[in-house]
Image (cartoon, rainbow, N blue to C red; front, side, top):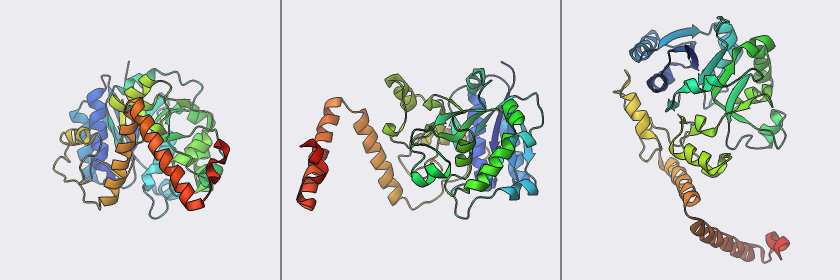
Length: 334
């Protein structure tokens, strides 16, 4: 296979994570890689560090600057968990003018690559504008669902890993459609992901879940076709995505899943001396251990799951008897 193109967007806040992502990508991909970084206010120092990181690992890097007109066109709400850089992938067909590039892989910066991404470029994308992995619990509620005109059964993808068919994007002017939809939806929690799902509803190719494996996730929330798929996702993912903000490897916390992979890769970058950031971790640990417990039960032998389920259901049964003085919620079983 020839040269492949990878896209990401970053600012100074995420430059460290961008370096980790690109380093892991280049160390696991055998063919030549060109990395396109979209930015608006990335410092010259961080640009130089990223360039050194990529070239040291055998890659090529280009920076695409988002001008003021586009930077002001779409801006996230104050207090949003993401920055304005989340929107920058929408402008890919304007920023990357080389029409010989027909496919490009977009990756969030809070990712570590564990496999050769060139495999994804072998997928026939003729009829699909994007390929992605199904998200876990989205749409999360009716407000989000109806805001993007989704039905109860529509599939919703995570936008952290997107294989983009640039040829179709140019032909169908998807950039303009995404900008209009983003302004229309004006989402607070998923400002980039909701418009992408709305525009590409029923038009996207679904990738296996291990190509976007959330580091902190309940396995019961993930769609698997087979038990082998589940085991591959849990133990041998191709891409790890640190998307859950309760436990990320750059936080000053212990027991963070896949933390060692991030730390080992960070040590190969100019940011290796940076210390983890301090966080108020009590509630984070509470949620993290709850998820670990749920996953441990899920992966335990069937007899143990049966006993625990029986005990939980018995406790719930007793709770309703005491609280409601009747079996209102169990009427259909009697």
